[in-house]
Image 1 (cartoon, helix red, strand yellow):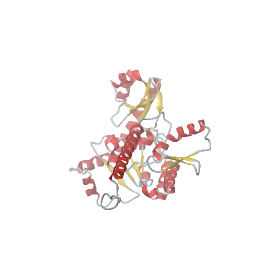
Image 2 (image 1 turned 90 degrees about the vertical axis):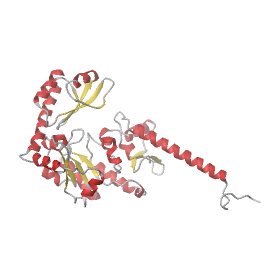
Image 3 (image 1 turned 135 degrees about the vertical axis):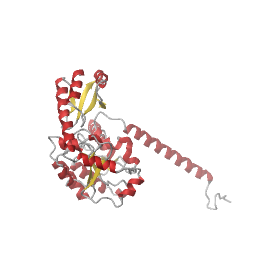
Image 4 (image 1 turned 120 degrees about the vertical axis):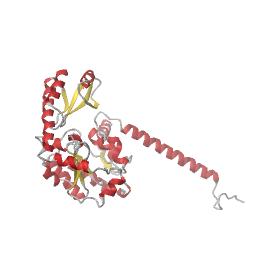
Length: 357
């Protein structure tokens, strides 16, 4: 007569134990893979993206006919023999550049800590291309399982970018057209907006920016304000009942008037734009000085940020007289650093720096 275990369903406890052990081992392996992946995803490559490296490896091994395409999700990479394509998840396909991971990994992961997933697309000197944005969204919806993945809910760009580069009116218009077509809002980070608008190469005015996005903000803290930024809703309505939302996130100032009076002053008699021009003029002077002393530029920009390749032995000496920001390792003996001018930078500051270069 057979013995039945459990609640009369003929379940063998040994079988349950094996299933439990396998489940625990599987979860542990998955956790280890995710942890290792996250750790190494923070280490910068030599500048190549995952797609570039994969293409190089395939070609080197005679697999020239294998295509490379994107697939939504994280760690969803796979080869499909039916169409002879290697599918790389978005982060692995386009990751590798500072521009593509800046928002995802910078600011202590604040966006994702707030409950929103960051989806990255390729970056070019800090900027996205409209065609890449359209392709990303198109590939997302071509995936039959898209409802089980993270939806692209908004597009985030900066003006100027963390590379000090600028979107042209045509570039921003093209990106906004994709957003309108796909019915997702376009948000423009304006932390450095004063310096972008003051640049000679900028062909976008503040009134025109209102027509080229759904939401943007006017940066205050980077151009002399004590605190705060002014958020402007233009292509979409402001959220209903914003005060409770702000308060729930611990961001409501008890003395909100303090923020308002600053922006009233900044937009009186053109002060905001005057502040921007001050930073641009001193940045131009800084560029001339760096060129005169024979330094190589990693990226020369039209705004207040300049990226210079410094010999490692020069960094400590320069830091005694100026604040410079480490950007990335260039080679064994050189480092890319970022110089920034601001509303408070004077010609005297540039002269002091020139004397120690």
